[in-house]
Each structure stands twice: as C-alpha cells, then as structure tokens.
Image: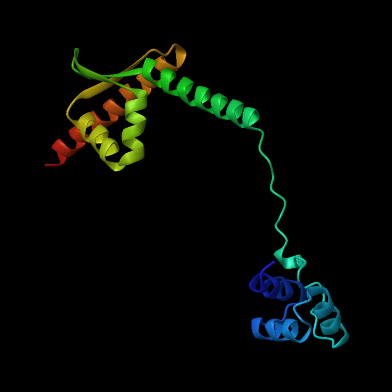
Length: 168
C-alpha cells in the first residue's frame, strides 16, 4: 500500500484531515494500525468514521418484476386500442337535408375536443343554425337516442332562428 493510500485509509477510518493523518502516520513510522490506536487513545478518532451513517444509508430499492410490469402495460395498451377501435367503428355522419356531406369517427371528434374543445363545439352549434344534422352509425339503441337528441337540437335551432326572424 502506498503512503497516499495509507493516508486516505486513515482518513476514512478516523475522520481526521489529510494533514493530520499524514503527520500521525509519519510519527508512527507509517504503521497504520499503530497510528489508529494512538489516535484513538488521544480521542481524535471519530466514532464509526468509516461506517456509513444512518442518514447516508440508501433506501431499499423496490424491485419491479419485469414480466408483471410488461403484462400490465400490455393489458393497458390492449384496453386503449380497444377503445380506439370502438371509436373508429362509430361514425358521425354530417347531413344537410338528405345529402350526406361526410362523416367522422368518434375517435377523431374526441381528439378534436381534447385539443381545442371550443372549436368543434362552436362549429356544431353554428352548423345547427345552417340546417346541418348529424346521424350516428355503428351504434344500436344508443345511436337512435343520439339521433333523436341531434334532431331535437336542430329543431330548437330552427325555433331560435324563427323567433329571431319574427323579432326583426
């Protein structure tokens, strides 16, 4: 062991400074064990200087089972993809009179609402005043309910237009 390594080892075991460790080793002819004994008798050894302190002890690491985590992630992705697939199967047709102008998937409409909710909502309300109607395809009983609600919203828009025209 080199003298530098001895000084570092003494510092690690006793907690004293570099200069104090070098000086103590020189006084004891570079005998590490004798130097530690002398420093201990002098009361210069910090108790458990080399041992890790309680506040320095690392917290136990919680191990994650990769197969369980992978299975949970796979199930979550499957669920999300299932929701997207169902949303793609449900179409919202945009009608003016009896003519279908186009259709959007429910997934696309939801994404539009998530990005800028006020734009699709405003367009939907304005479109009702211009005679647009919406039909939901790909749904059984729920589609009929949504269609009737859409019709009622269109009727209310027509009533508002009529009242507005009469007031002028």
